Image (cartoon, rainbow, N blue to C red):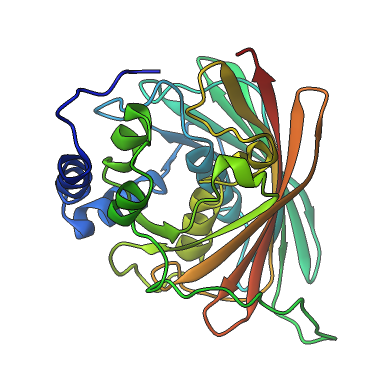
Length: 308
């Protein structure tokens, strides 16, 4: 763990986080997010490509990015009015932001109400990710949902600056992460290690308005669904992603979309874990609109290796 400078008190840390998060205008952050979904047609039919990012900011390709891009690639081959309602994906190799990413879509099935697509994602001819997605035309039917839990609203929970103020012993690595400009605002209360929690939540929304295209909102939620979910199975052990000696990475990711929503309005992400073992941990998420409507569900298994 990096040792914090002695003069780096809480006030200066809060200012660092505030300055870092405001260093890029919100509208530009959203333009950059939407640019990730702007896939170019490849040389063959039903193929797409995304160029290397001009500036590499991570040591590996963010899982939420490739989930969202594969969703968009699949959707580009499905006629309206069908919309994506579920996806199942596997992370096979770590991707590289500095390399072009190629998407090959297999049109496995097209029926009157349902379509199914497989997406194979490659970098340098190596498969890094697979996704299967199902699409369905809007339909009426029986309806029920689990009620949204009674939790504090987004105005009542911690922003990034308040997180730093309330947990003054956050490691330097966590401060640097909180200070990064992000296309999503996240607000929540992080359980303390001694609580050994199995559940936590955060509110999230895009930092600026997005276009009305429903696919862009579903892709944005696919992107954001990978932010914080894997850390859930670390909570019962009093660990987090910054704990020295802990290696974690996503193995698979599944999502189901239940209702329409806007990613630029507050969404509640309730996350829980009921198992870890064999160097793996299982995480589940339920995503609600602020009016209590359950709009999506997510499940993710991750690799956890801890050598203190």
